[in-house]
Length: 323
Image 1 (cartoon, rainbow, N blue to C red):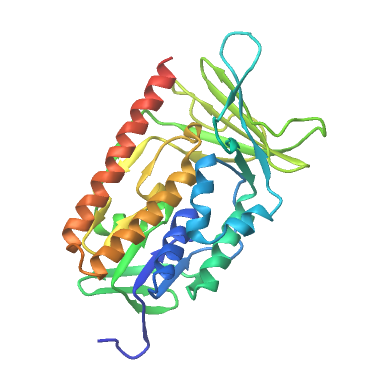
Image 2 (cartoon, rainbow, N blue to C red; image 1 turned 90 degrees about the vertical axis):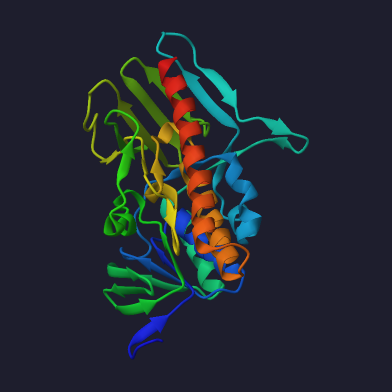
């Protein structure tokens, strides 16, 4: 029963990144009432993203294919890679099919997030920026926020590495690598610079450079073997130590994107994984609401699906670094 001053929703999403917004859109598209809480002011500042070609298959599902096509984001067909040896860089295309080469995207982070947010709002999602959760009770599901109380039937943690919900529930982390940190910054580009990203590998780490727009390139650097900390120039740093949560879902709750697991950006699939896990969490929530499976079974299936994918990605990345 809803108390005075308490609002009610079907699904509550913490965090308005690509994972949280994809979950919100997918659930709202099925007719559920969805509320998204974003702690920061909107639009929030966020680094530009180099999006894997796989995201394009998700855009029609989310109803943003036309908006993305008309946004003017730059495309690229692969990555220039230069190894530790002093040899010429080699171009690695993403691949191709009968429709032509697969193309990635260069998307300014704030603009990409805003496209997803506008789609969610168009579907009736209650989008609340500058709103933080303060406390939570699972049974029945009630959340106290900085703007009042909310009751819900399910909740998705898309708070990134902050893992707000899981920390409140006492879910521990599993660390799968030595400490790793990336440092990124924006640089002015030369007009002749290609839009294909450049990856330079060294014995001590790597440097990624991607021309995001006509004027700006994003440079991301990481150092291995204990060289922990900012690398060079002004910018921001982020802990990207490989890690995952011991539990990625429970009856009535799901973790998506970086709140579920973290690998360093060299995978090139961070946004793709966030969006896929968000859509999968919304589908799992729908199965529970329609009575297709129990809440416990839905949580177990989601957990094992995401945990198995994380282990496979860890293995591939470990093999890459070893080489």
